[in-house]
Amino acid sequence: MNNIIIKNIIRFILLIILQVLIFNNMNPGGIVSPQVYITFILLLPVRINKSFMLILAFSTGLTIDYFANTLGLNAAACVAIGFIRPGLIKLLFHSHEFIADEEPSPAIIGLSGFIRYTIILVFVQQLIIVFLEMLSFRNFWHNITDIIIGTIFSTILINIIVLLTTKKNK
Image 1 (cartoon, rainbow, N blue to C red):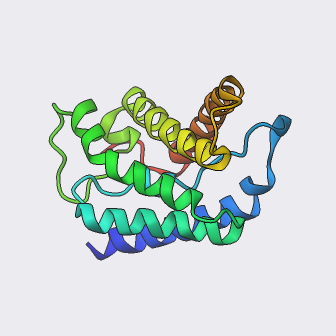
Image 2 (image 1 turned 90 degrees about the vertical axis):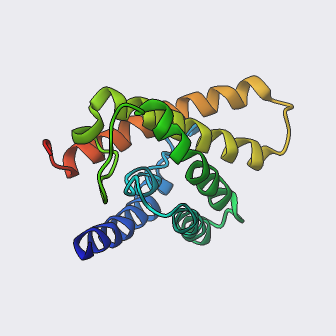
Image 3 (image 1 turned 135 degrees about the vertical axis):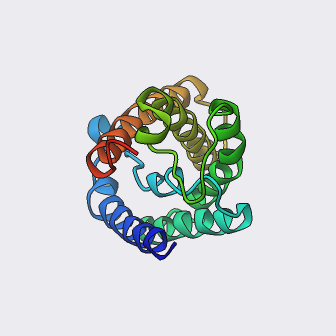
């Protein structure tokens, strides 16, 4: 149990540092800023208390908001993905019985399952951030393009990070 807590504290700190120092300063093509910090929320244990998960999601988003000066956009997006995450896991992986402290990693749910899971949650996060930032549907198709490109780019980076840092087998 303590190993899981320490692992997640280290993961949180490293992802925040990566996001703030590297990925917030990346803006390829002027379109997308990759959002890899949500990997922390994606990899929380499946059987975590839902209220505690929402508090962790809010804290994660608020930490990024503090450093990026984004006034709660990331906190709102993180709480939203934290809220839909348990239902999505049940929907996508209903046949898998998760044990205590097991995280939805590629080693547990398979690479294709993890990619689907990541794409959906990153898409929701990007959707919320873009539309809360614009507060308008005026440039709807441009915003949708930004969301799709952001989702693809962030999903690729998240999967690279997860594949490089997680165990290959159970």
